[in-house]
Image 1: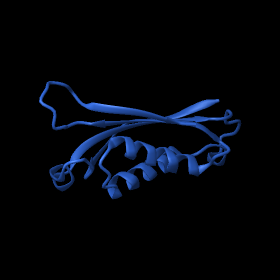
Image 2: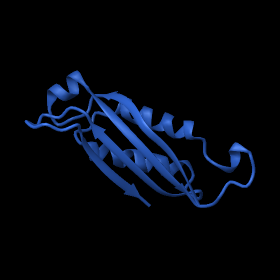
Image 3: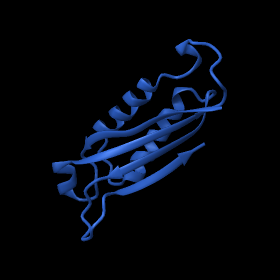
Image 4: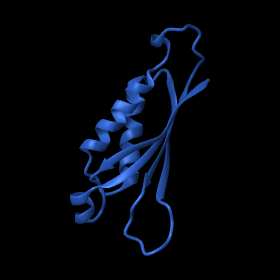
Length: 117
């Protein structure tokens, strides 16, 4: 088994519960971890899954999504990533960080982590 990871992808998105969040948009950071069911034994891309394909899927989801919750966004990402190759992919972990939230407090971000086996 091995993992493919893409760390700290940055996107501007129009998601959120409040109308202003959807209108103005906000910055998100996303981490992806995909556990594969076996080692790659050749040097051919066909024996694995290209991480650029994962990035393109996530970018497409984020740019087209208008959901209220980052939990919903994470779930959509997991479902679409798993569809790429259900035989090779055994686990997907997604972290979505919302960098600005309407909370009166001092903190860096709000994050959800979701796993889909």
